[in-house]
Every structure is written in structure tokens, then in C-alpha cells.
Length: 510
Image (cartoon, rainbow, N blue to C red; front, top):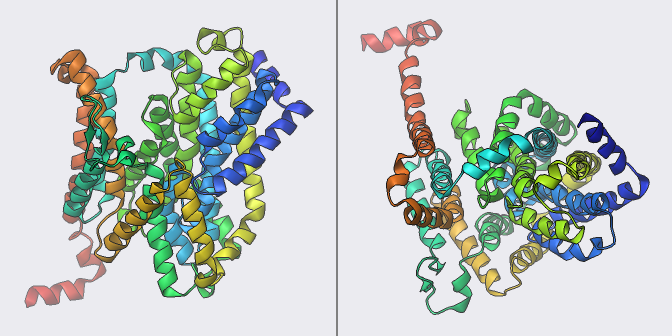
């Protein structure tokens, strides 16, 4: 096996294969930076070009392009608050506030390097665990998927910060939005208001773009200033600081990568779910959770590391037994068919070299893309000092393109505009936007898995050991913030007499 592992590296390093992979990386770089295009859509568009390629060359082109979009999608998320990819939305929460206070270089340095580390960890896990995890994934059914979905919804509490009630109300509104479309059980329109467009539900991409990017662009237009204040800029030292932050908060990177891998393995959960769970977990375990959403470097690291790790995770069920872990992996199944490969035991035996070549492609593609991005960071950061009145027209075009290309429907632009209004209102009255978006992502999944769980097991699924373990984890996550807060209050009086004895004595005397 070790011999095959290193032989597959030599296959990837063949000059023709490397050129094909570099072409895929270049396409993925551009697609990731441009909001709304999407790695999965581009994969589908590029499939016809691999008909005459050998399997390793085909995956060097397609996989190299796909994994790079997740990395470069963070660039526009950080600089302009416009998610380059739907799975880069969580990077906006803290990356863009850092840019506005002149720390774009630090945020990009942290996001790009954590993405590389997440990709390396994901590729390493892919190489080791395909044979091991296959029985576990096969054992997962709708009840377990439902509990994983509820686990994601539990993070609403963490993402709400001090506004717990507002967070739950926004989450409830998000659940209502998630119910729009065809009822999966009855097969009839629900909350569609006789609009054919709403039969498919509300697409996540225009919603994310409007809710976050649209609101920020509107504020930039009204302020008539640049995104970042040049007098506050830390452009020169910021990149190195972001790199150091990645190693200083190495546990955040490792844990977020692990969450991305695990969620990526579970078919149907998707990268949008994974990033919010990783982000919420990072906030709950942080020593400074109040900084999240305001420019926390830990939030940037969690989102960046999770982005690439989840792609490696989604490849595990795809390769092992032909069940795609994500939309992009589903498109890659077409490449398996085109190149004459059969997902399953063959990929672990006779075609093991192709499987290991995918590991090397993920590693090399991310290293190349991040190296190029680091070379361009200083030029990219300078864009944030351009006056807002110059940038707004360009950003509005990006918003329109991003919303329209989600499904090539003009109604998506109206959804984006409506979400932008909602975003402005939420910012003005201090209502959290993240719980709303998380509930939209998870609402449909929760309904589907609940129906399947009841259809297969009635209510007996509640007694399954795996369900009980996940339920205990959900309860722990929901209760832990209050336990930590109570412990913190209990510790506060202890150091007071040492630090300020005179003040304390004065207060007691009064």
C-alpha cells in the first residue's frame, strides 16, 4: 500500500498531469473569487473536457479546480463581505469586520493558511480512513442524520451571544423560510403564494449574498468612505500576524477541520451546515466569545479550516461506496463514469492508485493556490482603501451576478434585495443574522429526516443508543454556556481583594 501511495504521487507529478492540474487550479481560483458561480456548477460545466483524459489526469483537472474554489472563496468574503462561495459565508462574520478596521492582511493570512492546514488534515484523514469509516457511515440512518441536524440547530444559542431570545426568534423565522416550497411528504406547494418560483424553495446563495453582502454594501454606499481606514491599516505586518495566529490557535484549526471531515462524510449535510457548526463550536469554546461577529481571529480560522476539510470528508463516502457527501462530490461521480471507474471496493483495491492520487491532488492544489494568493495579498488589500463611491457600482454588479447565477432566475435578484433589507434592519436593531441563516440551512433537513425516522421506526428511533449519545451531546452544548457563565461569576470575587483592596474596602464601608 505504501508503495502505491508514493507511486501515485509520481503519477500526479508527470508534466502533462501537472499542466492539466494547474489549468484546473487557475479556473478554480477565478471561480472562487467571483461570488455566486460555485465550484459545483463549474465542475458540471467542465465535465465534457475530461472525456479523453486518463483517470488521474481527469481528477487532477476537476478535483484541483473544486478544492481551490473553497480556498479562494474566502478572499472576497474577507475583503468585501461578499461570499465567494456559499460555504464561505461564515468567513464574512469576522473577516469583513477585521477588514473594516484595517486588518485585511491579517484576516487573509489566517484564512488562507488555515484553509491549507484544513486541506492537509482532510487529505491525511482521507488517505487513512476510507476502509475504516465505511462500516460506520453505512450504519448511519435517518435518526442519526436528524440528531446531527438538531446538533447544528443547538448552536443557535451560541451564535446569538447575549441576545438569546432574539436569536431563537430569528431561528424560528428561518425555519419558516425553510418550509417554503413543495411539501416533501404531501407533494403540494407550501407557503408558495401561487408563485411558481417558490415551489423550489428559496435558494441559499441569494439569501446569503443579500443578508450579509447586500447590507454591508448599502452601508458602504451611505457612509461614502472606503471599506478600511488607511490610517488604521496594518497591511505590512498583518499577513505575518495572521500566519502566527494560525499556529497560536492551532486547536481551533484542528477541531474545525475535524468537524468539517465528520460532517462532510455524512451525505446530505453539506458544507453550509459544517461551517456553521464549526463556527458555533469555536465560539462556545473560546475565551472571548463576545468578540465573534465583531472581528474575532478565531472565527476566521474556524471557517477557513473547515472549508477545505469538509471536501475531503465528502469524498470518503463517494469513493468508498458511491454515495456523494456533497453536491460537488455528486458531480464528481459523473467523472467516475466518464473515466470508466466504479466507486466502491474497486477504488480500494485495483484502482487504489487513483484514490491515493486524489489525496496528493488535494494537497498540491491547495499549496499552489495559497502560494499564489499570498503573492497577491498586498495588491488585493489595497482594494479596500478605494473610496466606497468607486467600489459600490462594482460590488453591486458582483452581487447581481452572484444572485442570478445561483439558478439563472431573475427572481433570485429580488430575493437578494429582500434579504439585504432584512440584513439592514437586523443590523440597525441589533438582531443576530446568523441564527436565521443557520435555521434556513437546517430546517429542510430536519423535517426530511424526522419524516423518514418516523416512517421507518415510528417513535422507537428515540431509544437507539447512537441517538441517545447525540441527544446527550446536544443537551451538553445547550447547557454549557450557562454553566461556564455561572462558574465565571463564581470566580470573579476571588482576585478583587488582591488587585484593588482599597476600593473594595471603601465599598464595604459604605
